[in-house]
Length: 239
Image (cartoon, rainbow, N blue to C red; front, side, top):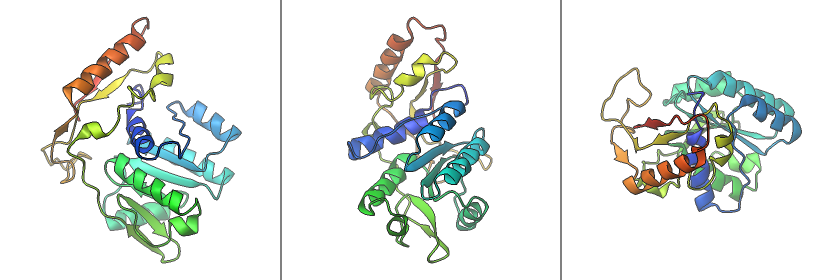
C-alpha cells in the first residue's frame, strides 16, 4: 500500500547489486515529491518504476514527465498491473509510448537481464532493443514494429538468493519517515487461480518461503531501527 516501505523495488535493487556489483548507482524513492525533485535536479539514464493498481497513474505520469526531460532516457516498468499476453503488451506500448520495456512477473530476474543487455549495448537504445529478446522482459521494437518477448524466467526455489532489502541497508532511508510502516514478505506464490487476482496464474501457483533465519534477522533489524520511533507498526505479507 501507499503507507509501507517499498520492498518491491528493494528486492529488485538488491538482486541487481548482488550480480552486477558497482556497475550502477541506484537511488530508491517512495514519496512522489522527492522523486520529481530529483528528476528536476539530476536525470538518471534509467527510470525504473514498480507499479501497482494504487500507483499506476502516478507511475505513468512520472515516466512521461521524465521522457519529456530526457527523450533518450529509458523507462522500465514492472509490477502487478501489467498485461501478460501479446495483445495486451502491444496495446500498452501503443497507449504509453514513453515506456521502453516491461519486466514480466518477479522483477528481480528480468530487470537483471535488462541491465546485462544495457551494459553489453553500452547504453545505446539501438543495441539494447535490437530485435533480440531479453529473457523476463517485453519491449517494442521500432525496427520490427513488433512486440519482442523474452522467455519467462522461473522463480528460483531458494528465495534467499535474493538479498534482503533490509539487511543490505537499502530500506534504511525510509525508517526516518514515521508515516511509513516496514513490510516483510515471508513467502511468494499462491496455490489458487482466482481470476480477479493478479497472482491467479501458473507462474505464481507454487508457494515458496524465505528462510526462518532470514525473516528473524529482518525482524531484529527492524526492531532495532524503530525501537525509539513513534510508528512501531509492522506489516507482514505472506504473498
